[in-house]
Image (cartoon, rainbow, N blue to C red; front, side, top):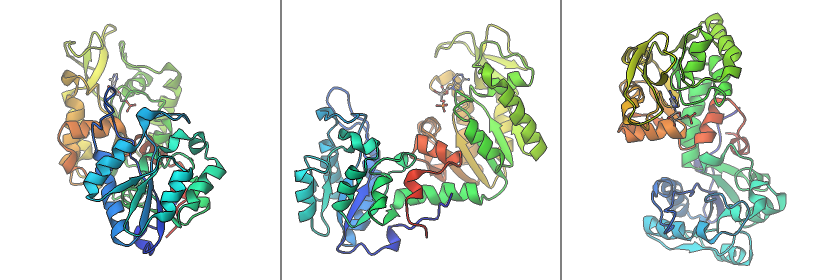
Length: 396
Ligand code: AMP
């Protein structure tokens, strides 16, 4: 897949109406609807400012939550318009509908340097179904399409891919950053290229492992998914997470890595517990895990083994925690990995929701080259899949 896409720097936006797909899917207080983190709105500011300062009239749009085609007052983007106004220091005109009369009239009247926000795209079922008439109506309001919502580029929705059939499509600064850093890591990584995978399930990451086996020099596996691999090697794993139907796959992957000369590292010791609980007493186990215990985190020898393996790497991609990091007693392995990445001197990329929040929670975020904003999207990126919201952008 070609990640080398035209950006807003490659087009003259002066005097043009720009349809800008943002990710304003912000977390909200269940009771009051108040925005509990405006990080995603803040992240969109550089692209919006660039467009406005270069004479564009910006028609911003986004989804919020999962209204599934129903008009749900709780999921209105009105609070986002308000916060965006505050952050930009200028009025954000808000449309009472998406492609209806109000939106059309406000879009038609929009002047260079002004910004309009449409109502929640997913209030209309045709957004997620990529309805051609809906996409065309969105596109008809503008002359240029800019995609800056990386979290949705793996979806072929009307506002993420459909509109590109009617408008020249460019990446915004957020999407461009994701493409240039992650795309380069996958296409032409600075070597050695080390992939670190964790999290709960092997089955979620099969395509990631398949793809990375073709590209990486070292694959490190931790987290719950490691135990299926340990079992496949003949170890006892007690009551640890096991996907019995993936044992043959795990064996194949270990054999394939060996045949390809890819280093494939698994935990050599584990912090175990008798029950899945934050208060459980950690028990350090090397080798076979007794039948009453489950692996909850990697142990100190593994921390060292994995840290050594990332030392001297050129590029490191990390997706998925090394243990049940939500429980303090079992967050050590994930913390050690975050520290190892931060100190590696490599190009470091953290993808996926859980590993990203772990890095942030543990205070290493500013030492990582790039933390991807899209959980599902970055996983599909690592799978080497064609992303509809990227494929539709103009090639450089
Ligand atoms: P994922 O969404 O697949 O990246 O998985 C993230 C989840 O995996 C987190 O909620 C972790 O608590 C969980 N996890 C990591 N290691 C283990 C483990 N050893 N046993 C059970 N769950 C785990």
